[in-house]
Image (tube, helix red, strand yellow):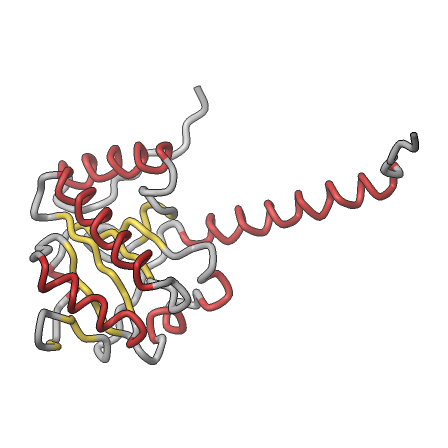
Length: 194
């Protein structure tokens, strides 16, 4: 029986590639902390049967999600309901989820809204992808689609609280701090080695 042996040079090259991908992701994430996220005036709030203007700066604490157009309708509907439940467990009207969508998800969204009213979620229609382009997120949109923002729309955390219990713990901790400081980020260190 022949054994498959990976040549050492090939293994080293593979490890370097994996490490460089990890480093570039970490570098991209570090660049986002403290960055102000811009919401274009052309993005409109979607309600059950209308679309209207909204002032995002009136919301003290925001979890912002960009819904990928390739997300299937049932996945979108399920995610929408689960993130709404997460926001409701926080139990404070100062915390809202901003869901950025395009026309692909508009009809399924109307169906969801007819079933139940989700007061904790604000849906913004962004057909022209202003959100990604205005914030230089085009190249990161596959990995960096969820942020916790403070009162000034500055990034406090990067990551999806529904996909990782560790990220959810960080979100819960930072939201408590933001609520205690009227939506303003304090200068505490986020990652502390224990």
